[in-house]
Length: 471
Image 1: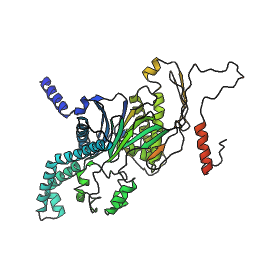
Image 2: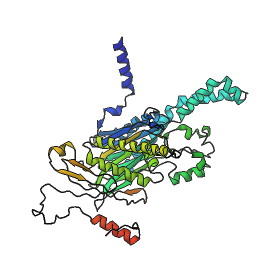
Image 3: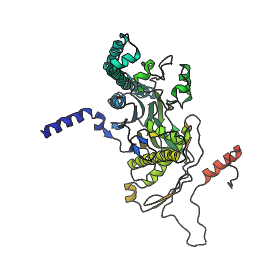
Image 4: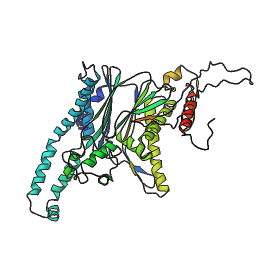
C-alpha cells in the first residue's frame, strides 16, 4: 500500500515540477538564497511563509536566460512567470532576429504574454468573486447583520481578495549573439560590473526600480489622486508588476488604492539593450526584491550606496571562495547578518524599529571574466600567495592564489543609474626579482596612479575632506 502512495506522490511532484529544471544550467553562474525572517527582540528569528522567489539560469543552443521572479502575497504568479517566460524566449522565438529592436520586441512580447496568460488563468476566481458580491448586493441588511448571517460569504471574499492580490516582480537577463538584454518590472534589480580604462570596477544599474523610491512613479501616482500617506505602510510597494489584479482592474476594492482615478499598479516592463559583452565586462548581478529591500533598510534613501556596498562584498568574496555558488551564498549570508545586526542595534538603543522583518533573498551572479583565485583549477596549477587589502573593509590572506590588491574607494557616480566602486588591481608573480641586498629598496608594485588622479580631481573641485593629509 505504501508503494502505491509513494507513486502517487511522485506523480504529483512531477506534475508541479517546472519544465525549466530539465534545461541545461549555466556553469558560469552562482546563486545564493535565504528565506524570509521575522525578527524578535530577543534576537530569535522565524520564517513567516514559504519562499516566494523563483529563479532561472538556463542555456538552450546559443541563448542564455537568467531570471529572478519575486512573488508578493503568494508564489502563484512567480511560478507561472518562470515557466511561461522561458517558453516564450527559449523555444525558437529568437531565430532570425538579428537587430536589437527585434530581440527587445521578443522580450517585450514575452512579458505581455505572461501577464495576459496569468490574467486569463484566474477567470474562475473572478467569476466566483463577482457571484458572491452580487449575492450580498441583493440583501437589504446592515453591515453588522450581514457579518453575522453571511460570515462564510465574507470569508470567501476575503480569501479571493488575497488570491487576486498575488503578483510578482521580475528581472531577466538574456544573452543572445554575445549581447546582453535586460527586462524588468517591479522591485527586482540588475547590475552590470565592468572595469574602466583605470582598471576601476564600475557598477551600473541596468534596471529601473518601480516603487515609491522612484520619483517618476510617485509623480504618476500623485496625478492619479494618491498621495504619500496612502502608502505610509508600504514604502517599497511595487507600483508595477505581473499579476496583482486587485491593484489593477480591482483597485477600487483595495483600501489604500481606492481613491485613484485610474489603475495605480500597472503592467509596463522596462527593456534595455543591447549591451555588448566585452573583456571589460566582469560580472552581472541579478537581485530579488527582498535583497533590494534589505539594502534599502541598511542604506536608506541611497540606492547607489547600497549597490556599491553589495558589489564590494561580492568582490571580497570572489577573493575568498572557490566556487561561484560559494561567492553568491556567502554574500547572502553577510547581508542577512548585517540586516539582523541592524535590527538588534535598534533594540539595544531602544529606538523605534525602522524594520522588523526581511523578505526572501535571491542573488544571481553571472561571471564573465572576474578572477576567482581560489578556484580548484587555479589552486591545482599554482603555488602563489595571495594578499588582499581593502580600505573599506577587512583584509584577508589566502594561500595558493594570485596576489592582488583591492581598494574600494568611496567615489560614486550616481548620474543616471550608475555607481562606481574603485577596485584597483595589480598582480605579482613569485618569479619577480627581489633585491638581494637588504639595503636595496624594493620597487613598489602597487599602482597609485588612479588614487593620485582622483585626489587631484577632488582637490581641484574643493571636495577633499578637511583635516586630512593627502600628499
